[in-house]
Image 1 (cartoon, one colour):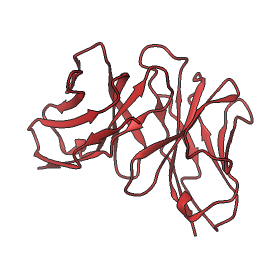
Image 2 (cartoon, chains in turn blue, orange):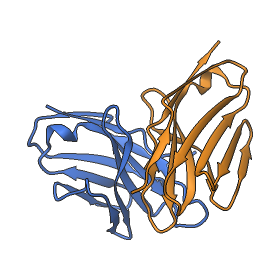
Image 3 (tube, chains in turn cyan, brown):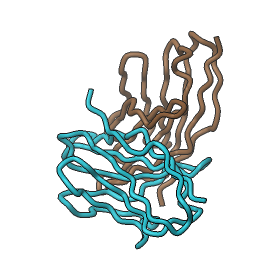
Image 4 (cartoon, chains in turn purple, yellow):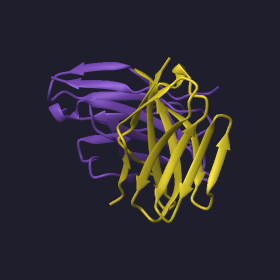
Length: 115
Length: 111
């Protein structure tokens, strides 16, 4: 069964450093998403991406964040200058063209720790 | 804004039925989802229901939707130890991409 994959599974970085989290969505999906879950808190939506542009973003997704589809298979989330409060589990998700329930399928997550 | 609430913990015995409840505030929620998260793993989609439905059954899973009370439930029949996990309710407005999640209910199944 096709699945969303994410790398790395864990990342530790120093405050102020840039990090890039990588995702490979399911191959025939066209919508891509990033969510995050700070320890002990709810899963929060960050951004959705379709047709090479951001289709929706939350208040969390400020200028420190950016997303990119650098090739036909990868989808990345970049945090330019990490802060302590960026420590969280980051989930990538993908879905097909809207229709029906437009279910989003999630990857296993990248646990980011900012020191 | 939208809010989704769940109870934090549920403990059942193996073989019993589990009922996990969820309430939401957004009256324009069109799609409602249940996800399962096992330790160290991602979010696994279990099932979903459209707001124009009252019930959906999928093998051991039954989803009930009460639109008037904005209440969603997930019933797991014949609960097994492998069902132990955190279960997340999520909703999505038809006009938006974002899912809004509840805080998750930790289901513990005792042998």
